[in-house]
Amino acid sequence: MSDLKEFKLPDVGEGLTEADIVRWHVKPGDTVTVNQIIVEIETAKAVVELPSPYAGTVASLLVPEGQTADVGTPIIAVDTSPDGGRAAGAPPAAVGAPPMTEAQQPVAGGEDLIPAGLAMTASEPGMTGSPAPKAERQAVLVGYGVKLGSTTRRPRKVGHGQVGNGDGRQSAAGPALAKPPVRKMARDLGVDLAGLTGSGPNGSITRNDVQQAAALTPAEPVPAQGLVNAAPARTATAREERIPIRGVRKHTAAAVAGSAFTAPHVTEFLQIDITETMTATARLRALPDFAGLRVSPLLLVARALVVAAGRHPMINASWDEAAQEIVVKHYVNLGIAAATDRGLVVPNIKDAHALTLPELAGALARLAETARAGKATPADLAGGTISITNVGVFGVDTGTPILPVGEAAILAFGQVKDAPWVVDGELAVRKVCTLALSFDHRLVDGDLGSAVLRDVGAMLTDPLHILAWS
Image 1 (cartoon, rainbow, N blue to C red):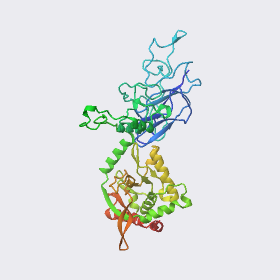
Image 2: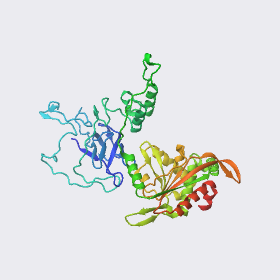
Image 3: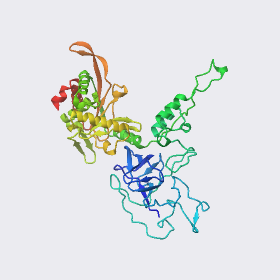
């Protein structure tokens, strides 16, 4: 006899109400253990891996990949009975599979056998039997949880010709199995995923598959009689494309809009000679303490901003509108803006002020790797106090960055390039970059903002100031 347990989508961060199912790691019929990773979901803050709370056999996947589910919605059913809850030869329930008709149901001993996961329970309307369980809260990863009970699920968005195949992916009649970044690449290159054979896990289509297909796509032939005046061949593409606003990008859009129209922004700029910082960076790479670590000028920029925040605590503060108070933080959780396939995220290094320079270099490397892999957790993204955005990696001199919500300042680090500079009265070619500091004018006046930007510039012009002021 089957013992089905439904795992409801938990609240993986305070205040989140929904998440997108990115990828299932299991399919109906698979055996799972407690704490085995079964699914990746994308919330408004990050991509999170969810572990199974049950051990048993996967009976059905209740929400397919690519669909949005509300917190508290059942997303998977696990049969926890010793025998897996299935009669010999009975197949597992499939995602979106219709119930069997009376003619299709097998008969044994004069009774109809209903496949596991499709039988009605005694607690359903119109049935008699044991009373429904008392509503209580479901355990979640973060927060107080949601109460058990009826949950209104939004209707599934099913594309034309889309057919479920029982493991959360789509069959050949529906979309090919590929991650969102791969789909975007295919759209940009004009490659039809339906005609590709995937080389990735479970037959999924990879970036390499798309790039190879794009390289092999022949140009549209031009009729011989029109060669003289014929226009260049074009690949037919749609005039418009619509991309759903969800997940990290949805949260980022709301955050930057809220910040821009709540905190009065002021941005100041400072061009500096960063030649000595570039020399110091090269010397640090040769030290044994930095062996195996990626040392870049961003490391010294980060240290300089941390030191400046210690010298000017008000730059490391936040505005509490509800309490009508200014909260000054005597610790630095240093945020580093990172561009990812899912949008902009700003994870932060906790207690960066307490780290040595090699420890800070290691923390920067881990943060960048985690963010690029889409594995930044809600905890990584919460609690930042002051941030850096490295626009120089995009070949940009500077910009006017928007403040992360709840922070008083963000520093933009522009590209380093050769430029003429006056040194000791003589014109010389030096390594030059532009710094831009945006700050909340409710907390930071022009004098304080200028002092912070000037101090950061002085430390990068002569890195010995970092030692002197630490």
